[in-house]
Amino acid sequence: MFDFDHAPERRNTLSFKWTTYPSDVIPMWVADMDFYAAPPIREALQARIAHGVFGYDFPTHRHAEIIAAWLQRRFNWSVDAQAIVFLPGVVSGFNLVLRAFAAVGDAAVMFTPVYPPFLDAPRQQGLQRITVPLSEREQCPRYTIDFDAFERALTPRARVLLFCHPHNPVGREWTREELMHLAAICEQHDLLICSDEIWGDLTLGATQHLPIAMLDERVAARTITLMAPSKTFNIPGLGFSFAVVTNPALRHRLEQAAHGTLPHLNALGLVAAEAAYTRCDDWLDAARAYLTANRDALMQFVQAEMRGVRVCPTEATYLAWLDFRAVLGDRNPQRFFLEKARVALNDGASFGPGGEGWVRLNFGCPRAQLMEALERMRDALQRV
Image (tube, rainbow, N blue to C red; front, side, top):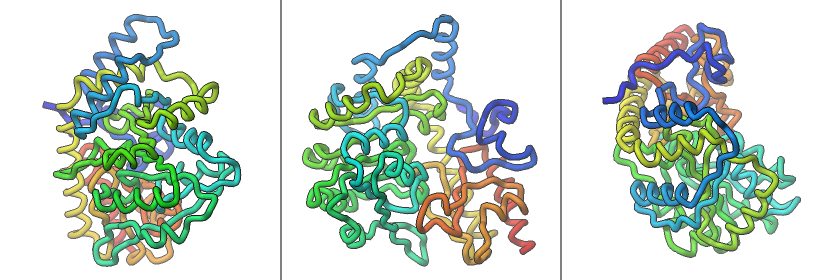
């Protein structure tokens, strides 16, 4: 029904992913997919463009109701439309949270390795950064949270936990038990939870996403959940996201902090988001199935063809996290594969402590492209 095996040509566009490196390099790095956006989204955008006027468009209560219906349909999460706060992006969202709920000299806490903008956000807001390494199992690199280390790392100035759920880059969908333990510590130490759940729609296989704010009302009262259609529907360039803030006091404070500091939403992003959340369920289900098959093909290939390489079992996202320390030693794997295989990956070191020797690989692409990149990587390793 949907064709994910054939991708549009992106080299002759302004794509950051496809134009950063020479044309002989396969780009498997930046986290956007190489698939066409869903037909209803493209149709809605074409109709809006045909109108020919692009003034200031603003979200309405109807847009909030559409999002609330999506959350109910996909996660069984009952959210009042009043709890939705519109934002131009998730990264600006968690920077806004730090600005609104922490003062200069306070601290933000995060688990590493983690999405690089997490690492930058505290400094940008004049805050301290507290990093807590995730616990890595040796035989099967499935990361867990070291809750004792988390509590030991907290200081009296810790104000906000920047939480990545599902986690980028390690691909974990945190369990209910993990979330409950985490929330209990945050309550004990009076930490606000800023939960980046942009990947929540992109769980793989039978994995289901559980928003942390769904645990109970007390957890929801200290949680700001950030979401967007951008990763889900491959429309990150259209600038649309939202926060779910059920606590009216937190919501008011967040909205006050946003006033005059964040740009208006993109008019085309509004159109695309409405189409995505009302007419694209079938496309998303098909995309998740294709990504799951890509994940499985990657796991099988690495285990069969790349001895000594470890890969995390990705439960959500379209990102694989691969450990090359045993086969490449101290060499930087991102640089090695760029030079020797002509494959562009994300350098694990950019994800903070614990990322050295790893790379992040984006498998949100046609399977033939994925397999060609993996074969190039295997061949480069065989020449070591």
